[in-house]
Amino acid sequence: MGISRKDFLVKSAMGAAAVTLLGRDAFATGSVDLSDKTPFKLPALPYAYDALEPYIDRQTMEIHHTKHHQAYINNLHAALDKRNAPTGTIYTLDDLVKNAGKYGDAVRNNAGGHYNHSLFWSIMMPAYSTGTKSPSGKLKERIDAKFGSFEKMKTEFETAAKTRFGSGWAWLIVQNGELAICSTANQDNPLMDIAEVKGTPILAVDVWEHAYYLKYQNKRPDYISAWWSVVNWAQVETLFSKAGAK
Ligand code: MN
Image 1 (tube, rainbow, N blue to C red):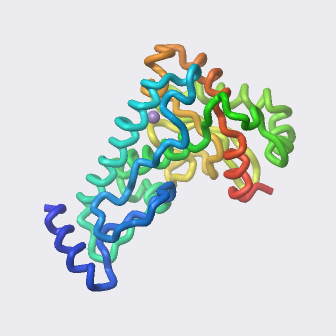
Image 2: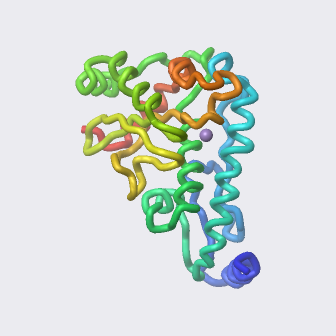
């Protein structure tokens, strides 16, 4: 059994240099315990569950965060445990996502789910906060240069989100130093080795029905147009500045 084998390896590793399962969670705020069998943690939201009302309702946010996101983390731990990795193996979320095609579907879906949702929470903010309601600075310049205007970028992004068949995500990415828009199926993302369009995500919208169905039912376009009201542009600009844009 993976669990008992891992328990042994973790215990035996405590006095040695190696540890069998260590996740350095890119979104975690705390330190990692080397004996921790569940290294990937549900990140706390930087706002209350009802803080995105009326655009995203409290119940949707709470279920999405505590049930859906937590399930991706739980299933990621189970998928990694099944791998029975040798002593010394270190898993990082970045590596799992970037090499998703090599780790198989269970890791691809659940590492993707953990990464995507962690990013998604971070690029939203309460609508009543005093943050900017549109991009500024260099990001605004690059949006204007690439798409013609912020409004035109929004239209192209919304088209990507609305036309993604079934479950998935729409993305604004930095690709070879330039902005681009794309969408992915399921919990894939543009960092993955298997992605058709690759780049560094700086903005993402979840278009799975679980992200909007309680309030918007089948009206995905209404959810997407409302969602702009809770985008945290300061955070998007931070991600843009780190993404190697020209
Ligand atoms: Mn989701």
